[in-house]
Length: 407
Image 1 (cartoon, rainbow, N blue to C red):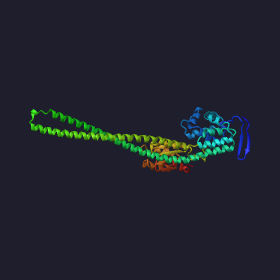
Image 2: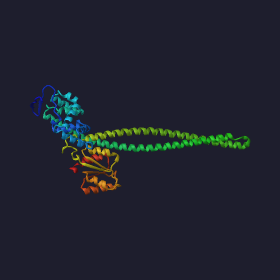
Image 3: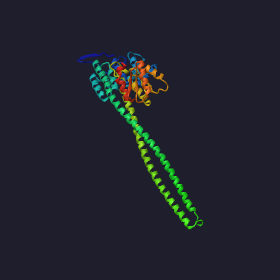
Image 4: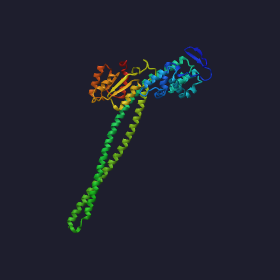
């Protein structure tokens, strides 16, 4: 390794490297406080999981937080996992390494500020912290910037939760309205079918009357009788023609209303799909903002949930996967009970006994389940939070606001 020359310039200690390409240090020699944000920002959980799996570690059932913790433990020294990780970094960010390899420290500082403003951080972060000629003062500033990004994400997370809750309510109202329109369309189809049948019967009666009129033989009846019969037939024909006209008109009106409802239903389904996509994007942003991106200690915003078992009782069963994502992305271990008590209390009691915190929804739950939860939590001295509703915002807020209870 080329020899470094240290020049003292006030707060900055600038390391001068020979004019050729700067030397990159392996990942296990990088400052420990920079490894956690480096791994969190530069490698996805899927990439971390694959590295551990290829080195013989069984991580299929591990949570995202556990995967991150295992990776951090292996990166403290040189081993198969740290070597594999180091090779992946050098390959994945080879373009960034080549781009910044001849930058001096001042140029890197300017590039870092530009990257923060543009949101292009991961590759630049690795290109800086892996260099051997970077001053400790600059590295501390980089760490501080990354650390504060986590705090800023909390504010964005709160805004996303509010917006997400609004979108969920809108989507629920649209779904109800769509169901009503589908039901009305079904009724109109039946009315249209009945009208068509009535029209067909009227046509048959008209044809029968015409045939009856044509079959009357003048020789078998006197003239007065034929006139009377003929007049009755004419009146009956006019009545049937009027009925046929009204039925046709009614059918046309119903078909027109049916077409309008079909167009309206198509527009509502399109809106519903757009809202569903928007909901997925909000959930992704919410989960991304709640990920532990810093070293997990008392200064971490989600430290209180790390490896805590959170039990949610009741709520909307269809939202179970979103509840799980919120809890596990906060570092907690997720458990769920739907609140139905027909199968007895043993299952609920076992879950409460081994949980660290219980969240119980009041609006989407049975009265018996709520009473049972309070009684069991008191029995096992478990902290419990009774929620007025089971929205994602309520679950996330309860996890954030009640961290003191878990500590």
